[in-house]
Length: 403
Image 1: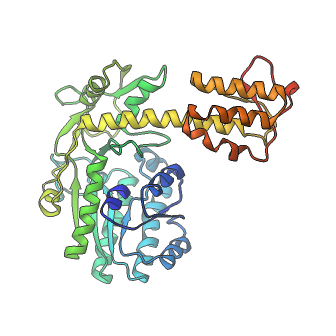
Image 2: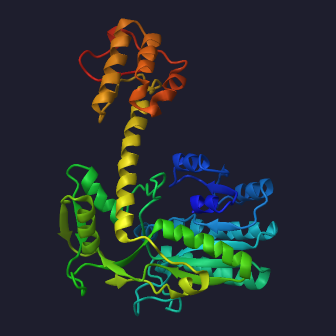
Image 3: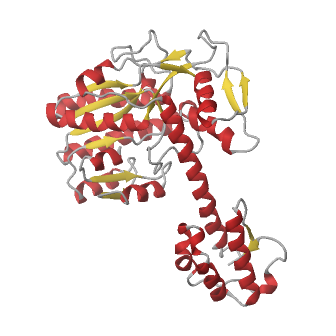
């Protein structure tokens, strides 16, 4: 959404506590345009107040929420404090600063178990988890804040999201990962990992659950259109966001194998409690009122998700390399692993330099191999002020270094 808004000429302030987010993602976005970042938490109203005092905020797009259904059942307080109470802090600060437009990321979880499909916006809202309840509470609060204070909101009820930025700059990066496509891809990237299908005895064509998977870039487009609708019409509304086409878990799995051109390890296990048989959207209202039209296919989502995951894992290898190399505080040897042959060569040269006489030689040797990976050009800055261990403290014949 930030990329979409930047392309539309918007100036953006990101407010995030990075509890589930990543500074690397923020830095990537900042490299693309005018993006400010303020670290803060919705549960701390003073931190929200600080942002609204520092910047003239015209409108808010509110994504911040905990979103694991199972966890919400085990720890509902976490969800009500953050998702519901935190949003109250945000809305109160908006009113105080006369900012009265907000696009809210709600969820199809507010509907609960579907009474009919496809699910439209008039479907009864009967959430079956604290997560869904926390979002529904916010929707009701926004309706009341509109009547009392004139705060206009667009509530976007997502179905399932897949894919990443088409240029692979940002994408899904969750711990733990609960989304279907990334979990299938784990079975490609991680040896010994088997994808589990929870139940193949549902009353569906292939026996597996059916869901509605909308591409994340199409979803981003919907947020911009919702913001433009608020600017244009200045009235509150609610919209479903989905493709209106259900895909079964088995269909998504088969599509992953076809797109990637390889077999993926899979195991069918018993059903999970609470999984609905089928759930997909009626999104005609968003198409008619907002002019939104999902354009990407599930194949597009899988291709970009794979490329993003591939890129992220390569970059993580290099980040891990840096982390292990400069871990001087522990005074312990740190293992360097999962390196490419080119990276192994660099490590060998650094070790040889240590044996020959210390840090300065190692840095020079490293500089001569700078073309191996452009991410390595900050090595000198990182190592400034650190000293390589003496040669007699290097464990002979093994890939260990300590700084």
